Image (tube, rainbow, N blue to C red; front, side):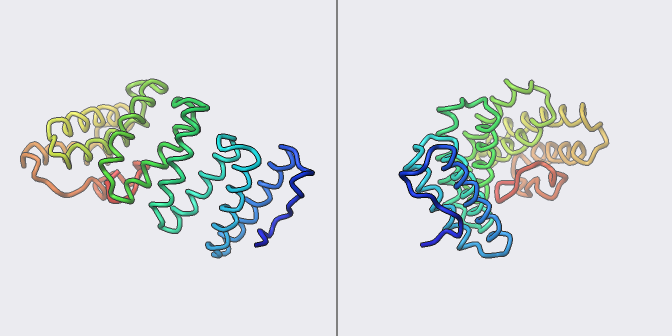
Length: 226
């Protein structure tokens, strides 16, 4: 099958040539995706992934790039189980080669959490969120603004498990961060305070998700209201 991008004979290639060819394949795939030819875009990226793994190795940065790009294509297509597989593989490689604190590893972990949210896989998403929170606290500090959406997501995960006191504690911490960065009267602060009051007053029986209550900008989307 022709990929639509120029290919060199294997015997004539070196690593820089292979990376150059991979970039051409990615560009061609991006063009097809932009034109709505999603099947062709996926086929091109699968071809690039197979070649990269064979010629450069399963843990090469180009292999990771293929996996994350392919995962993004599957995500856009709504094929979340395949997207999760790609992001899991990419994250495992990055955690081993770059370390869990590396910015690229953290980005892939966030993508994986987003996919798991789309799959409504709270059981798999929650431990990853705790891991992401620990890394963010270490790298950015315990009061950084970016911790707010993580705390909100985690509060909903533990709420589903009926750990209401823990859910309130996470939301109270998120509220303190929001107030410090956005003020007491911000939309997020008001929504978070209302959520805390609702859980407390109803003994954890509230079922309305945070989504639509001021968390549209939380950076998370999907069935898990993050």
